[in-house]
Length: 232
Image (cartoon, rainbow, N blue to C red; front, side):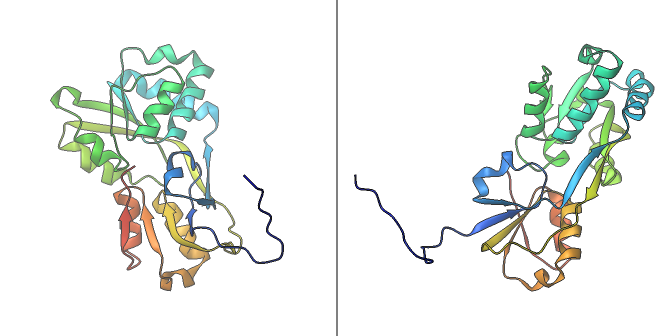
């Protein structure tokens, strides 16, 4: 077939993009084309602190509930510094979503239960029967709605032993990109807060606001916006 060359400053515009405000876009490519616009970065606590959390809590729990891929990475790094991942033998491992379960598998660990969508703890609890009752280590970030998640699981006989393993750190955002975008995808309440603090005029923009999980949707609703929760 013949080659086609476009000469000059004008070209047909491509499809409107989705501004992705989280740290890892790999799981969300189907919502694209994505403009990766990270508003936060995740920073693990010092290794000695994470190892101390594991040594203190591991003997007192029946398992671990991993809230994110980064939580898996933060815990595995601490395990390798102390011994290796085999020290989790006998513990029940639960993942709040498919990407988190995939991250466990990447480190040779199998999730005993996992949510099959992006509704987080609420979706996970629907997968758990009475046999999963007990106390679980919850290696979370400083932005995690810990009380909300404890309340969501308490009725299923699950108690969370929360421990801080990483922090959400705001990134100084630049001016919004010139490429058109009609959707903004938020992965956490932290990304919602940073976005509208940086771009307050966006509260009046006619965009589709995509939210990962009910906590993120709630943060948008508190700003009088109507979020669309994505399931996968």
